Amino acid sequence: MRLLITTPDAVVADYADIVSVRAEDPTGAFGILPGHAEFLTTLAVSVLAWRHADGRRGYCAVRRGVLSVHAGEEVAVATREAELGQDLEELEHAVLERFRAELDAEQHARVASLKLQMQAIRHILRALRNGRAPDAGTEFSS
Image (cartoon, rainbow, N blue to C red; front, side, top):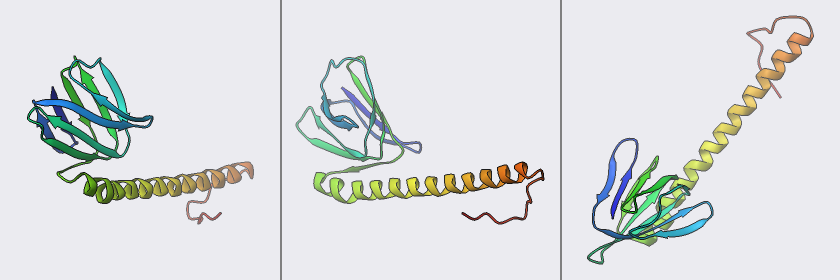
């Protein structure tokens, strides 16, 4: 099988001699062998593992993404961020922790942004109910 892992910036891995792939989606881990049915799933922050025809193993930490199987002969992974590694333990600990921390920071930033948007909407609604246009210079507060 062919394994293709891409990010928006680069082709991270492109191997044509893969005999098995292990990945993880939100429901758990799964494996792919040659001849697998057409398949499409979203990936969790996890480590992809694969085995080459000569027995070598490969690993890549992914920051979520989409995995698809085409015609049972190509596994394609599109992800925001990927990091190849030879040491599974290092990838699982250091890289996955960094990916998870970055996702948490993004979620906190989204929540803060939504709170600010809601404050602005409440301010506009209060001003409209009072029959006046919102003051552009007014500070928002909770």
